[in-house]
Image (cartoon, rainbow, N blue to C red; front, side):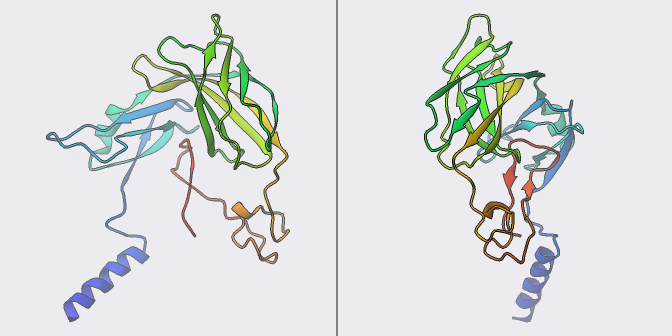
Length: 235
């Protein structure tokens, strides 16, 4: 019994000290800043890794990104990384302002270099904190590649604010790695609640019902500008 208790105490010590031996390990890799990356994890001896078997996102502005190691060497994953392109074009969205309680069913994005050769471009919507709120595939692209039509994503749970609408073209093998650019869209008519009136919306407030605690606790995981960002667990 003493041995069991000693082992349990040691395990708890590792976990609470931040040295959890069972925590997922990550690799910090490098690439050209602000381009999309893709890693397809290989199978080993006919056994494939857990789903999803890919890691994808956007390289940070400092040229770094982080991916799950999944038992592979970091140098091996670096060699497997595929990178797309980023034209960085300024695009326009129409409508540019959306009434969130009753949004339109579709919209138009204008610019240039939209390419439907391999698949319709993908349109991603990000909030002001960089979190992905919706993703759709264009329904049509003009013959000269200067405009596309796409359905609106589900906006029933988002709040008033400014959103970034990013367009990405597909590669020949169906992966969305070639970023065209982005447009700005404003949503209005559904303000995020601030229950305690301290200036921090509930989703970013460590104590949403205590006005004396005026500290925001918006925190992101993923590191090095990975996209889309994900919310951390309770802190």
